[in-house]
Length: 233
Image (tube, rainbow, N blue to C red; front, side, top):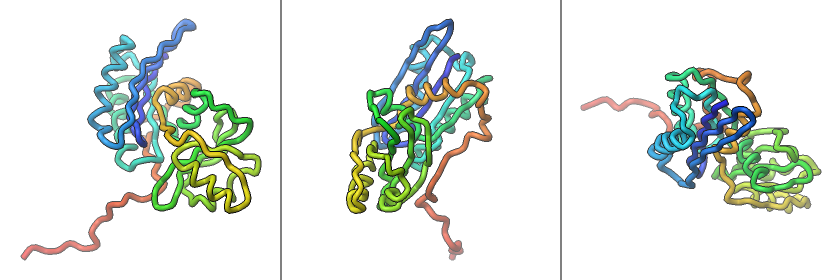
């Protein structure tokens, strides 16, 4: 199977191609942490990982993208690119949330929880994007947009670890409620290589269409339409 995976949801931009055939595995990855500029960076990354893998777009079997939560604009970039590529190929599509991908990144990187753990991302305005996972990275709950105090009441009593940019806020809220949660991996970001692994495990049977692969927004956009139109004079 030839899988192209794309992520632009948070503070990084990445593309990966995972090829599996006859018991072999080849992975080509480009990953750059950046606060903005994802739209300009993504397609050159795609061209590089495809060339490195020796593939053209029609050779792809599955195209995966993170669907959010994350930056309102960033989430749309990877999905739009995935949709466009799917329309000109016979590839199926796959999408999953950015927090699940981050949980996979942590586990691939050597994070070894002995029970459930949380992925907590700073969503600004005193809120967190929160996902709960078992020690194998299987999602238990989320993604949620939630205040740290409310998150503490939600997480299982057995949960002792949290990762991500919001983990410290979750730990501080837990301490105020006489609970201990250890924060870690504050710089954790989603990565297309981990997304490709998740997509591979999902198999082609879970393929989606361009119409069903949609952004996951947990809060409305900051931009608001004008309440009324001012006429010309």
